[in-house]
Length: 104
Image (cartoon, rainbow, N blue to C red; front, side, top):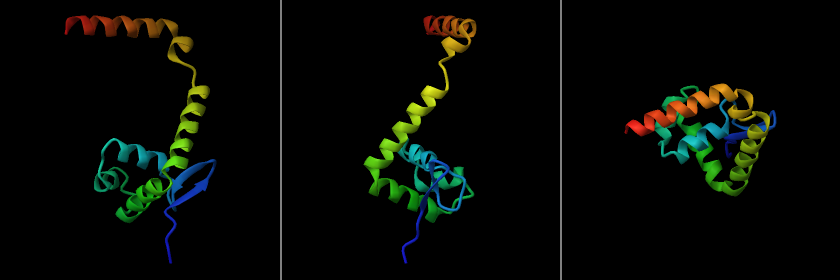
C-alpha cells in the first residue's frame, strides 16, 4: 500500500500527520538542503516523510509551483509594504543601507 506523504487541509498543503507545511520542505529543498538536513531542521518529521514530501513535489512540480506562487501573491496582498506602513522607519533603513554600502 502506498503511503500518502502530503495532505491538503486548512487551504494549504502539509506533510501528512504533521503541522509542517509542504512549502517549508520545498523551499529548503530548492535552496539545496539535503533531505537529511531538512529532517534535522524539522525533527518532528521522519526522514521517510521528508523524502515522501520531496517525491510528491517532484511528481507534481507544476501544480505545487503554482500553489506556491498563489501563496506568495496572497501574502503580498495581505501584508502591505514597509514603505506604506512605516515610511519613516523605511527611510531610516534605506539611509543606513546606503551608508553601509558606501563604506564597502
